Amino acid sequence: MQLAKRVQQLPPYLFVGISRAIAEKRAKGIDVISFGIGDPDIPTPDPVLDALEKGAHKPANHRYPESEGLPEFRKAVCDFYMRRFGVKLDPATEAINLIGAKEGIGHAALCFIDPGDTAIVPDPAYPVYNIGTMFAGGITHYVPLKEKNGFLMDFADIPTDVAKRAKVLWLNYPNNPTGAVANLEFFEEAVRYCKEFDLYLLHDACYTEVTYEGYVAPSALQAKGAMDICMEFHSLSKTANMTGWRVGMAVGNSAMVNALMRVKSNIDSGLSQAIQEMGIAAINLPQRWLDGNNAIYRRRRDRVVRGLRDIGLDAVAPKAGLYIWTKTPPGYTSADFARVLLDEKDIVVTPGRGYGPAGEGYVRLSLTTPDERIEEGFRRLKGWIVPPPPIK
Image (cartoon, rainbow, N blue to C red; front, side):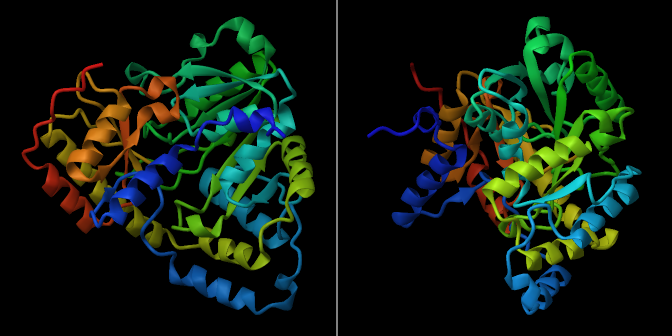
């Protein structure tokens, strides 16, 4: 017997190895500080938990949900898009719920990619864009995101022959892992480019609400003509500290949203309606709550950047997102530097190479680590002299 080739070819998921390394250390009684996974440590807010408790006692919520989601949930999503971005959406045809944005992002390739088709993917990037493409039998063409361009995709870097045969273009701003941000003009350029080459535009917008110092992130759907070709993915995981509850949504072009609904209806049975009711409460949290949550992350951002600069790393404070993306010391690969931090200081960071070839030479640190653990981590690094890189 033999497993399917798609499974045999599947690389280990980036965070599995990190979790194992942490577990091995902790099994030996070692105190490990992790800046690895972007998993908020701040609790889900009480009004959202109250909605779950109320919803759990409704008999209607004990039965199968619909794949597209409760009408009330979809309306709340569309109301949010109008309120936040000025984008008008039809709840019946242009919005769908997801079992977390990751699920929808992973399934999207099944809607648009046939075996042999090409997806244009930023590099570095969230690994699921590539993995979903591979599961659908497609081919990923990576476009390096360059620091000199502010990690914005340069469409001139895409060979014309690749663009002509490609089916989809993935974007993600605010960006994971780099922390880069894009303005509306960038999305308008992306829409023009996709229309020129007859591409679907898929935008991962999961970090638009985690912003600092007055920065306001746009939606790709605000760009002129975007509704003709674009579907955008969003999530409450980072916005409202709800990673464990798995509440996401996809919105945009009705034919694209319908395609995802058809795929999902044949694969999953939808998200628990009680959890969707949590989602409605989260979407409607007051701005002051969101501002307070982001203030915590901003404080952590500033502490992490200061600590990295103290040991000689070129750290930049991002305007959005939950990550610090910084170059490794000279001579180190991303994996080598992550290993020396773990071995010498019991600190976990994520090697940039795990996000694609262009991520080599960087590491990512998550801000979803409690303040006191951040302080302990940089206490360990105080005065640390990075050892010479390993000899290859």
